[in-house]
Image 1: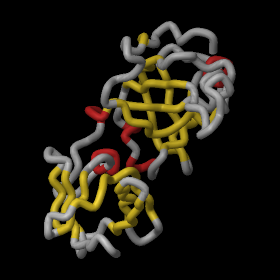
Image 2: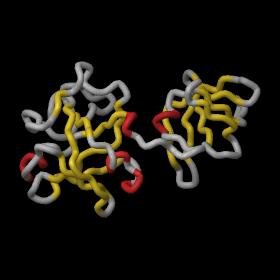
Image 3: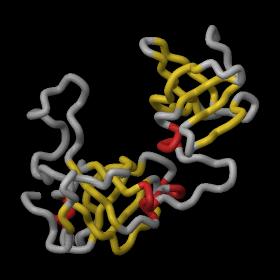
Image 4: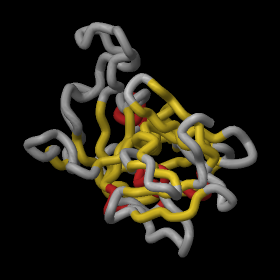
Length: 201
């Protein structure tokens, strides 16, 4: 679309909230009344998009090595993020369907196809005791029980049985299973994870 819907709010001066988290993308229009089908980046039943009522939409970031002037995805999307109010959102099959305020027909919904969806971290429900959002673990320092620094968590992968911390120490990369048998402490305020893991493993 060339301009945000009438009920869209302008993004902040910085473009997005400082704590914005990428959580999904608009897959396509759904129906004729302005609904959109959304692909969340986690289980639809657990998606923060079900409860968050302000979404920031932006054009996809260019792929690694791709010139910024050449972006994948729609050419009609906003050149800077916009904040949309969401009136309803629910699980539908393997995705979500949502109704943005001010998007009232299929044409307007189709103009959002391919856009990335971000929400403020503050919109995330409080996790249960002993549970953590992956986004909160990224950037934490990993040490072993002897106090040896093993690196920083750069990303988290999931290989079926359990999550894997991808830990970078300069050019060196470690893959550390995020399981109770190995993880001894997670101190988010201190940005610290302690694991039973040796530097040469």
